[in-house]
Amino acid sequence: MVVDRTALWFVMGLCSVAGVVVMVQTKLRTTPPQGRFRRVGTFLGAMLDGVGVGLTVALIMLLTAAAVVRVEDLFR
Image 1 (cartoon, rainbow, N blue to C red):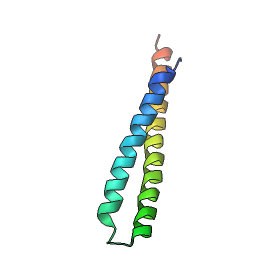
Image 2: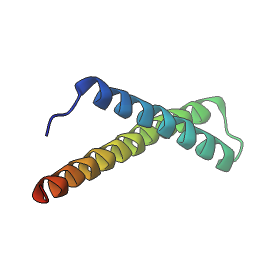
Image 3: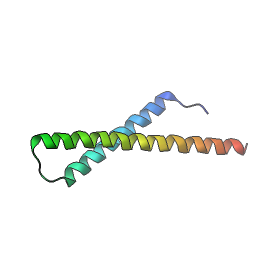
Image 4: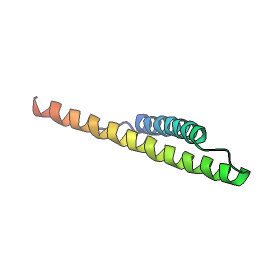
């Protein structure tokens, strides 16, 4: 199996950005009003959580694609 590096980096970046956007919106919507420094901490924590979620989704996509390719090779 050959992985196109450019496409892999694109998928990882896209998933990470989408994860950050979703997590920041969710976290800021659900937290009560806070002081300035706590809000910055919440924002940064949500960004890191989003990157983690995005990279996890990208990994699951890559592993699924690898499994599909392996199964296709078995039937050839």
